[in-house]
Image (tube, rainbow, N blue to C red; front, side, top):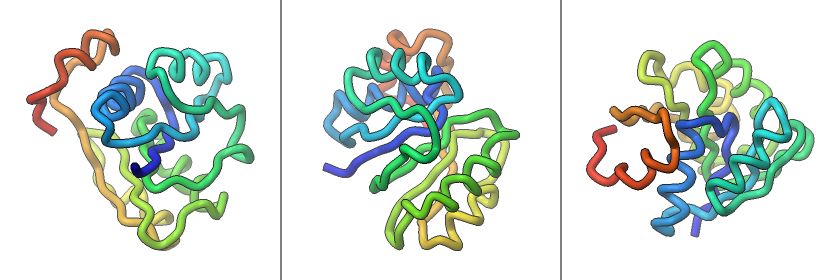
Length: 138
């Protein structure tokens, strides 16, 4: 099963991680948030993953999801590229509905396949959103 690591596991990241983990689509790897306590809370809600405290602890993964605010996408992509954990064939995507995958150019240059994916759904309550996610357009 491919490994998904999450950068910015807020409501969207937590919901998608939970949906994909429960469905056996991905094994959840590292979860990096600005605050370590929020990474631990996300891992607890998802029921899988390893909370990491900082970028230095982030390891390789098959897929990286950047579910961060729009203005943090490019800086996070840059930091991820600098970690040297992205290899050719790695997939990296962000969850903005307003920005293109061009914000992940540094990851593309490092060999990653890049994309943007934004579900058309409210994520106010990740537990509820995860339960009602099937059929959601992306």
